[in-house]
Image (cartoon, rainbow, N blue to C red; front, side, top):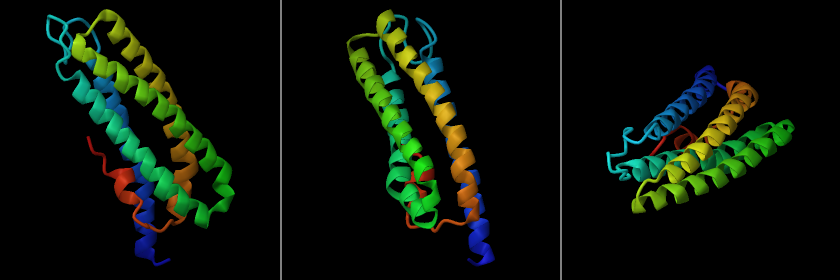
Length: 168
């Protein structure tokens, strides 16, 4: 692999870490929006404000990231590093668990159109707290296990765009 290509792949491990940092921050902002009766995203009457939009935007960004990993990055990684099959399988299992939580969060956020009740807010907060814990563990593991492989060189077969370009 030419030196320029190796430099680029080393940058991909940094981009992976930066992408995860962005997703963490978006989740923290969403959690902050659930802070209280008149927290950002809620008016004094308990209307949902931008909660649904924030939830849907965050869920879409995280889903796109994970789908890009599953269908692109991991496939290419396994092609050049079949020894990482167990690691990739564990990461994909995490993606499946996270997708389930995201589905629940989206459903609860959609229900807020009828009004934000304390129960709905608490339910969303609980789901987001669980999601934050799983995401943190998942991201740290992925950065350690996959970051090193990226630094050793994995061809860009188109997987970088959905993995690194977060969309809401």
